[in-house]
Amino acid sequence: MKRINNFLIFTVLLLAFVSCNNKKTEISDLDKLRNSNNTKTYPAVQMDSAQAINYITKQKVQELLDLSTLYLSGNKNTEIDTLIYSQMQSYFHKPDSLTFKNLFHELDSLKVKTVKVNNLEVYKDIYNQDTLDFAKFSVEYFDNKNKTLGTFEKNAQYILVSTPNTKKEFKFFFLNFYSNPLLKKDSISVGVTR
Image (cartoon, rainbow, N blue to C red; front, side, top):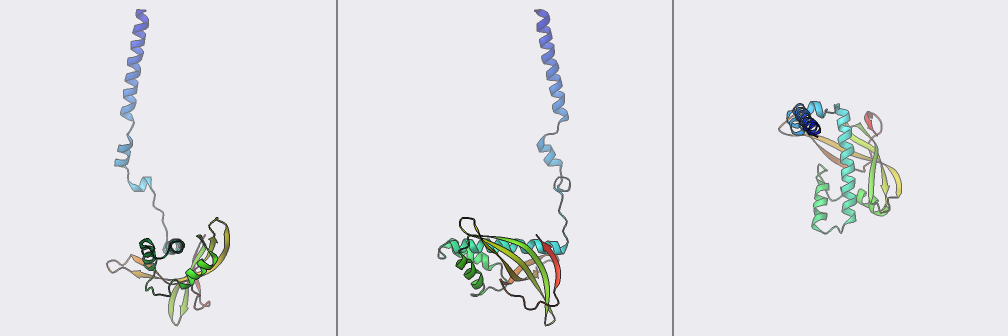
């Protein structure tokens, strides 16, 4: 019996010693976070300017359409509706009373509840020696039962305005949304996002 007790005590002490040694070599999660940097754990995605413009344009188009459907689903006279409308206006360089006319009319007439943007292509048109930036995209409309109402080809004209403090930062604004391009000739394709 004495041998069994000594063996059990020896085994417990050995296990305690081994487990203490394992804890010393293991780095805690807090130390891993403290000593890590973003380049090793979160690699940055490298995009050229055309890819960045495509990505930003698709994101802005989707956000504006989502806000539009949200605004149209409300009463249009509450404080939250006013806030949504002012947020939508912030996407435009110089919004006026006709800015959303075509968009609201189409979404209302089809009773659209959600929208998905597909196949966005950014291109440039030359009009009277000016280079204009356009986005051509298809939108798929869905009703309140998430049933597709169809896919439509649309256009939007946008502008990138440099910020006053830096030369590398730009603000994105729409000039026209759901507009027809002025000219089809002299178009230069910049990129395609799918």
